[in-house]
Image 1 (spheres, rainbow, N blue to C red):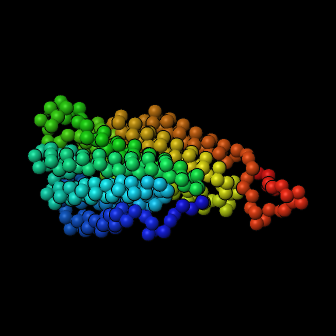
Image 2 (image 1 turned 180 degrees about the vertical axis):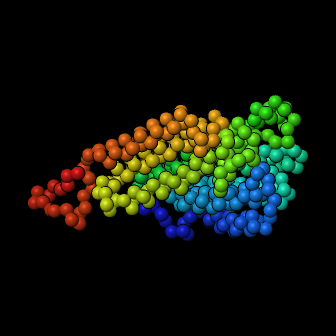
Image 3 (image 1 turned 30 degrees about the vertical axis):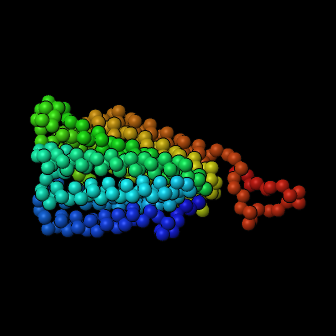
Length: 331
């Protein structure tokens, strides 16, 4: 059931980039300790800290997934390398603005700030394109374990959708459009919906507590790369206690269900943010939709396990028959 290969088979540039982001994580923590500057309501080193931690998980996930490719491996290597270059450039630009004490995202106050923001837009587009190529290659790869195959494929697709939420953030807010867009405002685009960036926020995440926040959908979508493989690990851990989870068909159905549920939750939090609603203050439509998603997932989960069929036979313990026919065990 495991598809994990040796670390030496992982995409090396992505692994090295993840290592550099570990270093950047500690640099950012040091910055939080010694630098008391605050920008848009948060410590100025908070943004590079969040990006570096996220890039560690993202890069290692892609590095592992690229080791699963069975064809077009060279194309996959170049796609992964493109992701590394784009991600590294984005981190350099973010850190440059931290040293300058300026916002990196949505900042068009000066020609230099605008150039940095435009360059970041290009790097994000390039990164998204590289990730798209990897997702396509994963769908063409012949991965023996079907549950693992669908976990990595659908995880890559949902992560692409999550990354795409970032493009929604670059659109001018109604207030910015009323002010004339780039010609009349120092900032174009925002993380928050219905409220200004930098207002009351949740600890650690920095997500708005008074309005919608597109970073939530962005975060949830991007980390499907880790969430769905974790589902596989959970199923593997439960298999010794639940016989039916040893069946590849059941594990595959459960994986598809997990992907569908995760995608539905990603769409829900994105829809909630677009309506200007804080994650921690859901209204009746949001709660009703959440209840339907969870109820549907629970019902489908029960059905996935309860569907009866010929279970896998343990050849080490199955009794032999004189007729030479296969022996099955009733589910």
